[in-house]
Image (cartoon, rainbow, N blue to C red):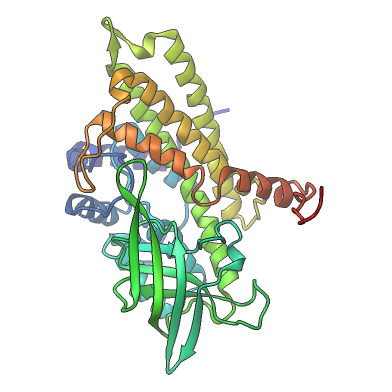
Length: 403
């Protein structure tokens, strides 16, 4: 098997390496959990957009580069940024989840209004899905919206809403058709987080930072046009978004970048003058993880190929969220072990602080623990893989009074 890049991709590789040489020192720091992008990050995102390294296949009329999808180009770009250990661009709920959803089912006006500002980082989005008592049973969402005088009037509560305390907008799943079945009674709304009657209350996590929120809606007004695809289509739209969320959480490019960071950490961290990467106990764990990352990258390329060919990947796509978050957790676990005593204490320096390497890995480690729950817990993901992907019998339901 010849894995040598053909001439056009070698040219792209050389182009990116020249870009790294010229601008790599301007890259934001990698890792450290979720927070609103600062000006340095926004400037970097703008530079990546100008060179077509992010938003590459988004039409030019919506702020992207307008290139044709090319799996190998995407792979070369991700690999070179990972190799250089520099920031590959914003990956958040707006860019990675809402934008592809709107490009697939949004109106022309919604695409014009939101795609460009979102990929630039000017608009930050949060996802209004989970509710108290309805975290995993998404179709049973009880937050309601009633149409009155050209506005949706929203009442209810969401929880575990990532980034809501600094987001500008929310894509909201709510019940608009009370007489329809639970799946057909939902709609997908776009609303401002500055709306009257909306209250976002941060929930502090074990990182010491507020990354989740509970959000309360009291007669929140949303313009009638701010609905995606139409009334009762929310379950369909929400599943398009979930498809992209799982791919984001299991992103092979991000995993490869973290592997390169881990290799750098093990190479520069020493015990009695010997780098950890030369010690068998660390080298063995690293090589096992490196093999998994390579396999994950190959799997990601297979999914991209099938998507380009219009093939439904089925169970192969269903494993992405579970496998990717578990692999991310094992990568950060090795990093924390390698840090030794520096990996034990942790003190958050605040939401906007730039942390040292040890604190960054500690934040990532604790964040990775949360990612195995967020976006569909690992146990729920296993059920999805088994029942929908492998056609195994459904998990028995508890019935009161049964023994």
